[in-house]
Length: 118
Image (tube, rainbow, N blue to C red; front, side, top):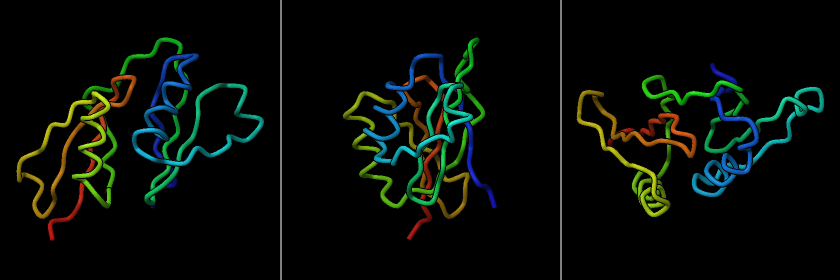
């Protein structure tokens, strides 16, 4: 079982991360332990997932590597992402039994959202 997935973000862009992960995705920000808070970044949780955004001074977005996140309402999330200006690229049926799409977070990191077919 995975505790969390960490993604990277540029230094000083925590508010941009919050706007995407809390504002668009609707995740809840978790306080970082004091010993780690000085490093920057932010943590989010919700829908059975936990994501940590860690600062990288030489940040480059992950364009291929990505977390695959189970999500309860794919259509609603896709609509919110599109309305906020984020790409929504629906996948084909190569992942049997799943509906899925890819998007990018506010820093350009690739994310995949999935839900089992009914």
